[in-house]
Image 1 (spheres, one colour):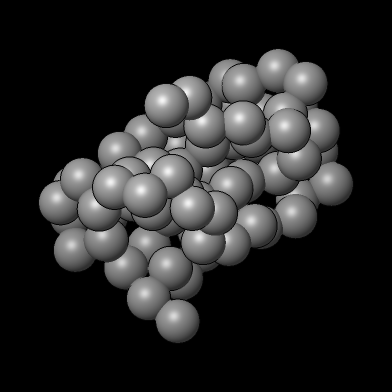
Image 2 (spheres, rainbow, N blue to C red):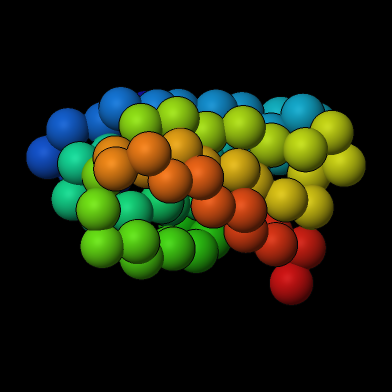
Amino acid sequence: NPIKTGHEIVYAVRYSPETKMIAMGGWDEGIQIWDANTGKLLTKIELGGSVRSLAWTSDEKKLIAGALGSSIRIFDTAT
């Protein structure tokens, strides 16, 4: 089933390395992390701007986001 993100535009979608989670970044809703098996929203990370790229670290403990305006932010996803 499709995941309804609420983003007006989705720019980036990434599975976590163990394919347990899906991270999505878009124009107006920051980052959303979803359970890949159930499609349930796990958490939202508000950024105040659009997210253009996403990458997980190999241990799934950090999510790296490239945002509009040339900024890169790193988020702890283990806690």
